[in-house]
Image (cartoon, rainbow, N blue to C red; front, side, top):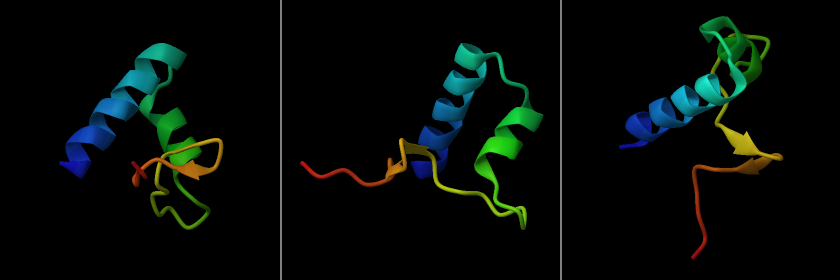
Length: 50
């Protein structure tokens, strides 16, 4: 389920900001090439507190 959500969010960002895949990789990988978790203003989006 997490990979589906991640794919949908990245697709949405690509459409909204007119990003190409290279822009996504540049934004969401660190200097070693590992993927970072998507965040909104440095707040981790993978967990929610309800």
